[in-house]
Amino acid sequence: MEGDEAYVMCIRRAQLDAMAGKSHRTIESHRGEVVANVRRCKTIRKTPSYAPRGPFPLDDPIGMGLVVDMLLKSLLATGRIKDYVQFDTLRKMRSTFARNYSSSPHGAGEGSSFAQGTGRVRPTSCPSQSDWIQDSLRGMEYRMGFESKVDHGISIDAILECLRRIRDAAEHADSDEEENELWKIGAFICMVTACSLRGYEGYYADLAGLRANLDAGRDGVIPRGLNKATILSEEVCKRLPHVTICLLGNFKGEGGINLHVINVASESQSGLDTRWWIEKLVEVCESEGRTVGPAFATPTGDLATPGDYDSVFRKYLTEVQACTDLIDKKVDVDVYFSLNRTPRRSALTRFKQAGLDPKLQEEMNRWRIVEKAKTRRPRFNMRQHYSEACLLMPVTWLCSYAL
Picture 1 (tube, rainbow, N blue to C red):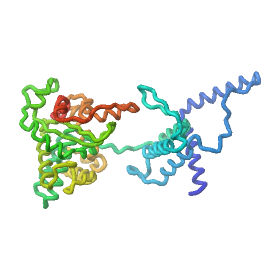
Picture 2: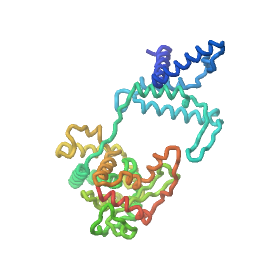
Picture 3: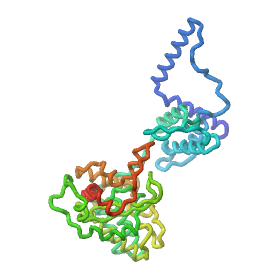
Picture 4: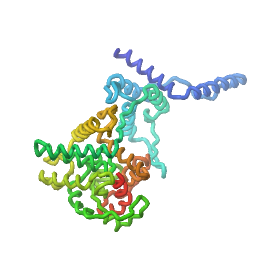
């Protein structure tokens, strides 16, 4: 089916979705009120005080064209998780439409206002913001449903076993290139777990920063009787065994390139040896002739390909699943695990097991506060150096040590 016939079908589908976007009881209540009011007005020969029901102008003030475009994508595009495109993918077209409109001659000329405490408010006649399109998209979501692909966490023991297998494979690699690649991937997995980072955040690791702070905390000692209730001063923190992770990049919510430093425990209670892996990473980079630039990179200095790291991570998780009882045999590793969020979720689970407040994770990675600010944009200086990072060690060190 194509041409006008398909076009009309999409319009009808959009109208049906809009009808389903409102509660049936709400519509029935409004309908009953209209009928009753018309009946009362008829007794005194008064025209009911309702806006005219038509005709609509020969234009598209409600966004019908946008919804038709979305429906066409749902029919013709291929989905990533399912055979079809899901609603969460379709709704991105709305924001694209709105951005296109705001940059058009008409949209750019619309007025704007500012309300302190609630963010930017912009009156607009953009069709993507109409009440009708709100109802249509809500009805579309009800009809389509969704199935998300969420990365699951695993136990710290499973991560340790994965790292052990990567280390063994590196020591028996057939070539120096293969060996170095495995050392880097192992260091990456260890680092994002210890720092509770999302996978993509790990690629911010700065080699020069790691090298400059590598000696700090190497000979540290854990004081006797340390527990989560212990109050750690800056001087005590500096004497703890720790390793400094330096991230350099354009962080969300901040302007320009900024440096972020996280001091984590050299080795966690479970045996996650972050210092050993970071020192190995620096050693491998130096053997490739690199002392600056991204820590996770190719021998030529180009940023590593996330897909390559992720495939190796899943490969060794599959081995862990096959050879141990640390990962349920019924779980599909390729579907439920990836470097994007699995290490972070694993760390959060460990925090809960240790009785730590999950909110401490936000303290370790403060740029995530922006995500919860919605229209408000918190501004804070992310340019932290080693001495400043020591002030946060009561959070970062205790969390990483609990892993």
